[in-house]
View 1 (cartoon, one colour):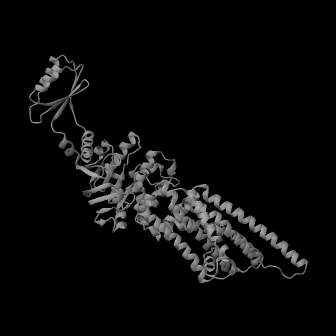
View 2 (cartoon, each protein chain N blue to C red):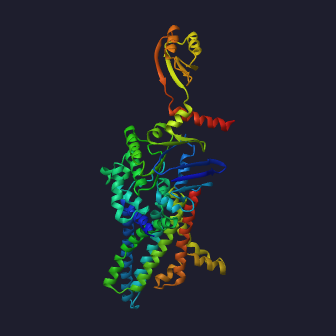
Length: 312
Length: 254
């Protein structure tokens, strides 16, 4: 559905994005993940045809965004970082306006607007003035505006920013419900967001793609071996050495009164012996649990490696 | 062009979702009403004096009322046009709602024409509402209807020139005040540009005379429709909209 090849964009001499390559299949929900200023918004602006690229090509639904921008725009719904709303307009009128701009025929206008209102949960506020709505509702109007013409591709730039937790969950559910009928790209710098909604993520940092895979694979790819966290009252060198000496233990990190014990992936775990060693050294075991490495750390590691690579 | 109309209608309605449209229309009608009343009383007084001293018929309704009334309206519109056009693009840029328009399947030409039409519709509303005064004249007297028609057409074309400049300046900035001030200054400058035509020498003098917005209005107020004047006004409007198109295009490249 979306093919991006060797896409670059320069702001002056500085590249905002640097030779990006990725493709997205119909019906997929893909998360664009990266720290602020990584080039997420720039990429999205180019894919929507808002802004031309310096070099490289993008095709959406088979149309080139630069050569056939009108066809592309007809097939794309876009929610920019700041929702493009006319505060003095009524919700319903605004959606009608957005639909008309996107070539929705007059006969289907009412049905499409009603369906967009319903899907975004705006039916009760359809007669309200947009400027008087709360931030969460404004964001929903922004999303409704993007999907009112039933586009093949939906591009959502940080769709849940500034919402309260309940609203965030609602918006995520809404995005998930779009899978299959629409191809969705959403960007975020928040990990839970992407893990909660997307099937696949593309991690970008400093304008380059540093990883792209399914969430499960990306986590396991880096998360080799198992780590246990052992919290104690006081750390004793002797006890730590005893744990280090165990056959299945790869290494032990100490931070404060917490030991992070990494085990070799292919060895039978010796949890008993680890605890035993701690008890023998009278460290006073408070807690022992499996440390799951979150995607957060994977993300930090990826973006960190990237910046180290650039520095050296 | 259907989408230009969609944009024009939406923006026209926006004038009336805020007090702006009502204030502009009410203010304009108040000033024009006052001007009509005064030219009418002055006209009657003058005619009375002509009769009293047996100096003939005096000025006609067209010369005595219609001409000064519309001439004044042209000046008043110069003050009102900046307020009408200043928000058209500047506000969209400031609130970033322009992203919706620039990612919709519409061409920049459709967008620019739509914005211009919305302003023209408002000025059209204002100008046509003043038609009540000439209608009174027609009902009770015999002003030349043809001249009335050409004068109104000229006024609309002249106002369109201000609007075209206004649309252009609105597209160049996010600041509405800046857009408005530049529009007013430009309108006034092109109004006064022929002041130097006497002293500028034969060729340059003619050029300055030709560039003056008000100079081309004179024929309309005499009841004359000439292609020169029509072409001048339409080129002026077209040029303003063309520049707007270029500015919007460059906005995407930044």
